[in-house]
Image (cartoon, rainbow, N blue to C red):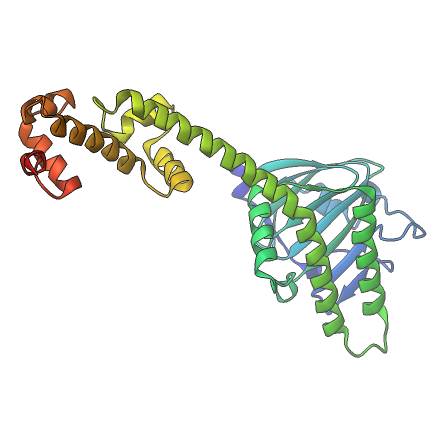
Length: 308
């Protein structure tokens, strides 16, 4: 954790840029190898970039950034996690993240869009905003195809060209519109990955629930604690309860109680056993504890239920 004790603040106004880049009112920054015709920037030998690429300390990033690797490799650390970016890797960085560049290959080519908090990609669509939040919670690069990368670059180029037009009066409106388009494209790319992840999680939770019921059917007559079943499944009681509730809408304790009470009712109604015997068969400490447990669940005492 020592790297968090020393870091520099990185904001848009100190990012180096050249004539091929586009900066708009110190709030929007488009840079990198957006055009095949423009000369490629040698990041490792660019003196303006060296402080950012070789800093021994990470930066606290004060803006949102979309970093797209177009070739070569770049290794970065973001909030203590390391990532290697390669051709068609897209990394979204949110304001407040702590990041550090660890290594850049000589042939690395990148394009990036940086936005101040005033121009963070808008969340006009609730579904899209939720998809982005779920994807960014995993904090992994988005791997694109060549065609998808080309489409992202095309949007960035059109936006850059509009912002460069000196006589264009409605740059703020154009900017918000193109950012909304870009946001929609990125949401579309993230959606199937988020859905696949949720499907995997859902499948695993269903498996845990099925195993819980299997254990419950075997042990409900002698074991009534969530802790016992969590131990059998190598889970914490809290997580087991969360999973059972997510799958069934009911808590693990409710399932345990219902199995016990169903058996108690069947034994009591059979007429073959006394209340004390039923209490013993279900592993209660004594008849009094059984009576309290039964009445709380059913609303009447075992005696009343047996004679009803």
